[in-house]
Image (cartoon, rainbow, N blue to C red; front, top):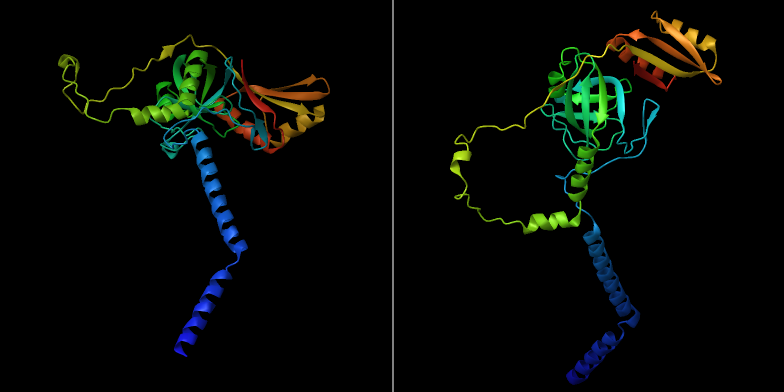
Length: 305
């Protein structure tokens, strides 16, 4: 009887083993294959991704964007040379990341511009005192009134820190800008990572270096010399130009609404009227730009002539 029972149980065991469905086994195998393929393909994609390290800056032009309804289109323009107002930023932006992964710093010769590539190099001239300085553009700024926002240090060196605003000329320096482009692009190539990985990590001896040329003071800080240019002061005045009024009466209506008492002229170009106000003080022009834009006149610009 016991033998019969054992035989019966053994028979059931064999039967249960045979009832494992082949489709289920094949499904398991197929799913495993899919996982392997997905893993391999994802690894292949990862090897093609350029350096996304948080510490590397990128060369950036960027897409068109709007500030209070005014459209700006960044572009590579190595002939850029414009006059307008400049303001400066303070500690609120110190060490804040820029649009191209750089850093805003109040203590360095940096600036923020609405359309120039990041990074670019420009010469900034304060038209009110003739002082000029070469700075690096590292970010976008969000002000329709000014063409440039510089660091606090630049404002101090160009001597408009106390006034907070200045009339400036901004000229791009093509060769240094192109060099920065090459550097930024090179830093984001796969080979750059390989160079860093292959760099020696052992201690490098400097015993053969001439000690007379090495400072004994470890706390001594070296800074790159700052060259401040001086140009003849140009007797230029500031005007505000507002475009595309439908009628002459519209120009007079807006002057009355904003209580503008300064001298103004109206010029007709094709089927539209343009309003010119001035000469103005820097602060007046800065405020009026925002006022006209809020009234719907998006094409409003400061002219220095």
